Length: 50
Image 1 (cartoon, rainbow, N blue to C red):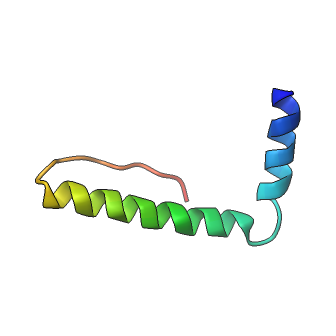
Image 2 (cartoon, rainbow, N blue to C red):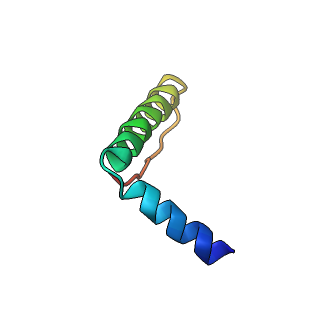
């Protein structure tokens, strides 16, 4: 079942525009995390793909 789920996920991600949408959402999330950490004076590094 896990392999089937992985295959379906890869098919969905390969559809036009889907991966770009995921990257945009991730960029927004990472920016928010960085802003909150900076405001709280918490040193951190956020790595993400995109």
